[in-house]
Length: 238
Length: 326
Image 1 (cartoon, rainbow over the protein chains, first blue to last red):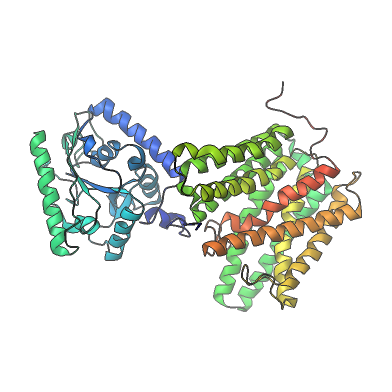
Image 2 (image 1 turned 135 degrees about the horizontal axis):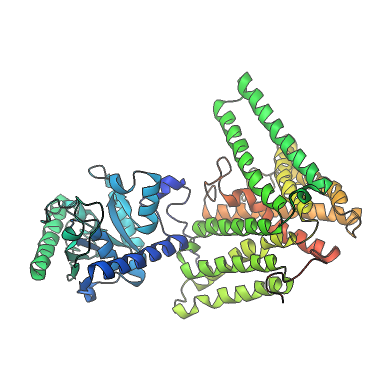
């Protein structure tokens, strides 16, 4: 019998550094806080937004990556609220580091409530992408990702950035395309707080990129296919 | 809640507080002289200031709850147990087993509740019962792979940080709690210093080089002699008028503090070597984690409790089941 003692990936990091680390692993405390936050978010979405999810049967067992159109801070909350069980506990929203991880308080909120991992716009290094890819597979995680890179300022969907391909090209990890409708009207980037309004999430069938090359051309292919699927889901929703 | 001045009514309490303050001031003066005269490397001096600063924060966090009384002492021991669990579960990987971590955390709270209630029968009954719950908790998951490992890790975590450490809190039910607990905390601190100092001065042969390469046989014996002498000497003033006022028992008590303290230290070294990590955490600058600082108390607490309980009866004559009683 071989014992497999596997210390936390973030062991030995000072508190502040740990919050921003891509190796941050949730313990019991984080899981309890994150679970309480998810319950609050679900109540908010049900009461103020009559939140509706279709296609939940398309969600595979972790690991997988969820991608969607991005026009609001509600987006990550909606996608997270559509997950249940181990997938919900192992879901990390990949959030803009320069918005969510700038101070101690926002980092605490992003890490414990949102269970977010930071992505630094135009500053994310290849090694960090590799760490995220490794963790996705080894730790059987779920990443919630918005490949447009930023919230749409007019509600229309922008082009997907190819960075998404780094996580899934050449691996068995599927991408689940999603389309969220109503988030821009409820909470656009120009508003400080959300207002009531119907939200609809449509979850599409998972896409596999196991045969796609892990290079720049492969990444572009991943982004293009995912973008087309999300647009198609948006078309169906309309 | 205790009347404030009663905290200082035992002369040993005042003596230990004065000695602790004196040692801190002396250390500050020595490091200050080193800094002014420029002796030692800047990195070494910085390390010394860091360690002293940590002690200046840690000591009030240890001493003030003891002075405030049993409720505060038990609350502090509970927090210490939970902090130790967090470091241990993250280092060993047990933290990925949410259910077992929750059972151990509840077990720690329950053991300390029994101490707070001053209900010895519950306190003792909780040890096998909690281990039983740990043993069956993950069976319904139908995941036999890794069962022995996770159950063993959780059991040792509970026995060390719950059942073991809660003995410190249970001691707070005794009228002699303040001088006794201060003596134990002071003694395990001195035990480390004595082992380090005598090891540096006389140490040649390594004690257990694969486990802890810096420890020497001379250091271990030096700590045993110094700590036993101090505990026996101070204990003679703590246990006046009790069956413990006996030099044989006092020397046994002192030796137990030193030996259990050193084994606690070596136990943590073994865990860290097995995991190939240097420190269990980073929360205490200059020391590492909470476990790196408090490892010696883990075995000292139950070992000394049961000697004293056998000889003088810890908490005898005090109100029992103060929360659950009629």
